[in-house]
Amino acid sequence: MARSRRRRSAINLGDEAPPKVTVSITWDCITNAAYRVSFINIGRHWSKCEIIITFIKQTIPTSQREYDPDLKVWFVGESYTQSIVDMCSVIPDFDVCFTPKPEEVFATKMHSKEEDYATFKRMLSLAHIEFSDCNLTDFKHAKRAYLRAAMQLHPDRAPDMAAEMSTLNETWTRLQHSYFKDGG
Image 1 (tube, helix red, strand yellow):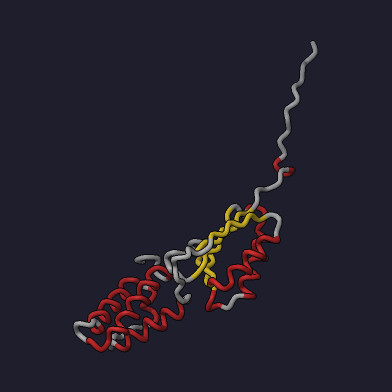
Image 2 (cartoon, helix red, strand yellow; image 1 turned 90 degrees about the vertical axis):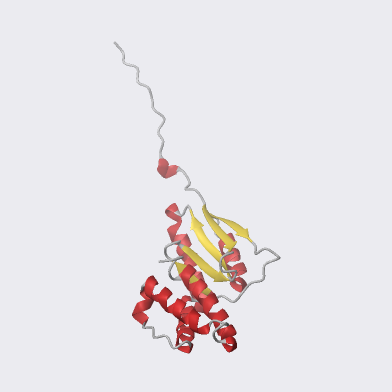
């Protein structure tokens, strides 16, 4: 009795080309100051992504770039975006999805967390609010200090401090989004 052997079609995943990495470069509508650069579908292409990351770190000043490890996103100043698009376009395993800034949007200055923190402390000192560096890690303490400073700098209480109040509000909003991730 002869046994018939069926030949299975072998699927060898090692022979398949891994999918391309999508490099998404989009305008960040939250900060209105930078582009978001993220890598999607990295897979086996990590070494090629490292080339771009090294390029970002070596060519863009720290004041014009910031990495968010929670979101796994680089924020890059507008004037440096084209060089990243050009660099990614050269790598054959990358698909670049570039979405330019909307024409009606005017970019603001990119602020680093360190700059915002320094401005926040300066505004608190103008309002005579004590605040130590260790308190910035605690959202509740930082928010309490912000609210106390807002009461001292409010235009109804101190009409000559309206500009400082505006700076405090803008800085606090950026710190909430970048440092505290919208509330702790």
